[in-house]
Amino acid sequence: MASHAHNEPESDAVLRVKAIEQLLTEKELIDPAAIDAIVDLYENRIGPRNGAQVVARAWSDADYKARLLSDASPAIAELGYTGAQGEDMVVLENTAEVHNVVVCTLCSCYPWPVLGLPPGWYKSYAYRARVVREPRAVIAEFGLVIADDVEVRVWDSSAEMRYLVLPMRPAGTDDLDEAALAALVTRDGMIGVAAT
Amino acid sequence: MNGIHDMGGMHGFGAIPIEHDEPVFHAPWEGRIFGINFVVESFVEGTNIDSGRYRIECIDPAIYLNSSYYEKWTQASQSAIVEAGVCSLEEIEARMEKLRSEAG
Image: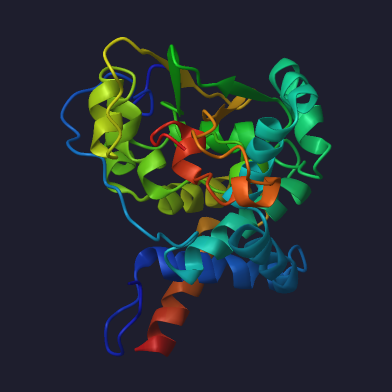
């Protein structure tokens, strides 16, 4: 969608980023290969499949779930997921009585080690402004209607605290192993705008 | 700071812009500035995720609303390196001009 047709001037942002990268490279302050590696990490290695593993483990192992809910970051680190923007994570358990949904009203705070970088809508002005005021309406725009007798809790992330929703385990999944369970878990479910 | 970034509860932004099968970065430059920002934090003293966010919060409100997410990151990275004396704004803009004329 961002393809650049010939004869069409490059945008200010494209040129500015290119200029900054060239100048910092010439001053030997950055190595373009290091930038390539960071891009690859977040495009291909760190993403919601990590969080899905955490959720599947919690569904399968009651002791793990207890550790996850009491102190999330170390429990998540047990599965090897650590790093930037995940120093202090909190896991919020959905139940038949309570549905949790996460936002960062100020910008885009998000638990990178388990979900990767946030989608555009999470960073959008509409989501940031509205989900704290009318969470049920916002969640319904994603196709999930929360029953009136279920309490909705909205969690506003900060640089210091990032949240991951633990969705309810779907009915009829008793026979599934962890890998099969993980395949059921979506990014949106772990933000709280989908059931699973 | 009670700035434009403090958006919780505001009215008028419309429907949530949901994009299916969204790429992590919508264009290569977004990934470049994301990575550059990471590395800038390693050589500009006093910069980190908090200072980056503060720089974004200091963007003029009209520009803030009209800039994409990674355009704001670009502004934050640029102001960090300019203030640290690593590059001047003139140097960056002269290089942009050069790139523009080469592309033309």
